[in-house]
Length: 169
Image (cartoon, rainbow, N blue to C red):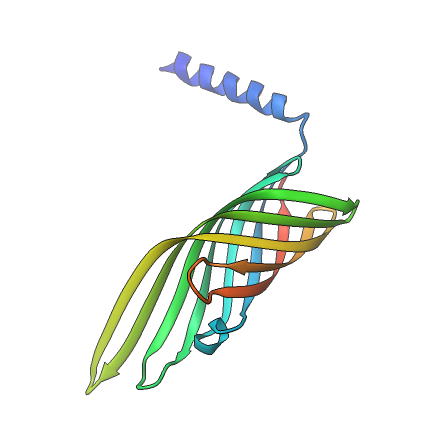
């Protein structure tokens, strides 16, 4: 068992040192999303975050965002949330200013709640859809400020978000 653990440790050391030559960035991002178009008719501001990795000009991210819903009438309120898994490319226009585009899937969930005569009712639906994001940003030291246009995939789910990202590596 000790030999196996030592072997895994040595492999991880060599793997990390081989990637040390490449500009790898790993970090987290917090963002605020503002619904656009018809999405703003039934959703309020959304909050979320993601973890990401960038290798040269390629990137991948896994996130979560949730929009509280507006009252749809009759006391029905919704919550719309998504877990986007995206891959994409990033291009540095000049050393501090960059643009990016991503595509992937988003695991979406919609929850509707209401109450009548003291009894609460709720229903939940979920689906997986194609999702994309495109935006621009500014990079300063270990921090990025991003503005992006995104969709969670299902009809009328477009939003603009502002994000603040921190790179650990």
